[in-house]
Length: 453
Image (cartoon, rainbow, N blue to C red; front, side):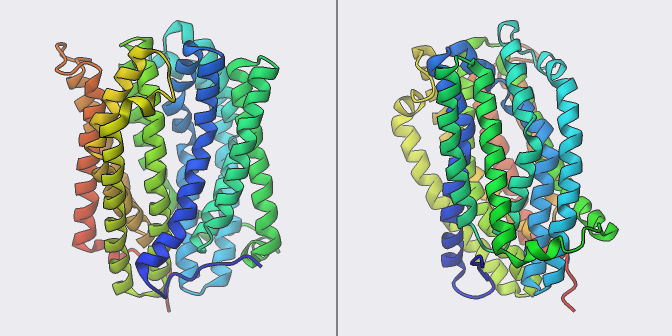
C-alpha cells in the first residue's frame, strides 16, 4: 500500500519541507521535457529551430490551461475530503475528475489541431519559424490526454501527502525524454518534430506508470472505479472548483502570448533571449510550485479537518521558506547570469540579452515566490475564485506595462526589449500584494468545500 502523509499533525515547517523537496525535484525534472527539447534542438538543429520551439511556449499552455485547472481542482477536493476523513468522497473525486479531464483533453486536442497555425500567425511568429513551430505544437498537444491523466493522478497523490512517487515517475519520464530526444534528433535527423514526438511518448509512458502504481497501491483509486457510474453533483463540483484555476492559468498564458507577440517584433535574437529567460523563469517557478503544492495539500487537509491555527501557521512557515529561496536565487543571477544563460543559447548577443533579462527578474523573485505561496494557500482553503481575479489583474498589469515600456503602443519605448522583463517583475509584485491581503482579511475561512458534520 502506498505511504500517504497526514498533514494535520506534526510541525508545519517540517511537513512542508518533507513534502516540498520531492515535489520540487519532480517539478524540475518535469521541466527537462521542454528544456531538453530546446537545448538539443538549439545545439544540433540551429538557433532558428530553438527560437521556433520557444515561440510555442505560451500558445501550448493556452490550450492546456483548462486541463491544468481541472487537475488543480481535483487535488483541492481530494485534499479536503481526505482531511475530513471522507474516504468515499476521495474516491468520488478521483472517478468523476477523470471523466471531466478526459472530456476536456479530447476537446482541447481537437481544437488545437485546427487553431495552431492561426494562433501562431496572430502572435506574429516570424515566417521562417512558423512551419517548425506549428509542427512542434501539434505533435506536443496530440499527447494532451496522456498529460492530463498523468498529472491528474499526480495531483491526487500529492493531495494525499505522497510527493515522492510523482517525483520518481517524472524523473523516469524526463530521462526517457532526453534519450528519445537524442535518438530522434541525432539518430533520425527528425528536427523539431522528433523533439516533440520524444516528449509526447515520454509523457504517455509516465501516465501509464503512474496509473498502474496508483491502482495497485492506493485504495482510493481501486474504490473509485468499482462502479463506473458518474455522479452529476461531484462532476459539477469539480467543474465549479476547477474553472477559476483554469481561468487563472489562461490569463497567465494569454499574457505570455501577448508578450511573445511583442518580443517577436524585436527579431530572432530577442526571441531566442526571451525563450531562454522564459525557460529559466519556468524552472524557478516550478521550485515555488513545489512548495505551493505542499501548501495546497497542507492547507486543504487542515481546512478539511477544521484546524485553523495549523492552517495559518503553515502559511507563515511557507512564506519564510519561500523568502530564503528567493534571496539565494537572486544572488546567483546577479552574480552569474551570463554563464547560466549560456547553457541555453550560444550566440553572444542572445546570451547578453538573456543575462540582462535574468538580472532584472532576479530583483523581483521574492514577489514571485510569495505570490505562489498565498495563491496555493487560497486554493487549498477552497477560496478558488479570488486567485482567478488576481490572475486577471496580474495579466493586465503585465501586458499593459510591457506594451508601454517596449514602445509596442504609443512608440518611443523607454526600455526596448528590457521592458518585457521589468513588466513581468512588477506584475509579480502586484499579484503577491493582492493574494497576501486576501489571506490577511480571512475570507478564506468560509470557503471550505466539505461538510465536516
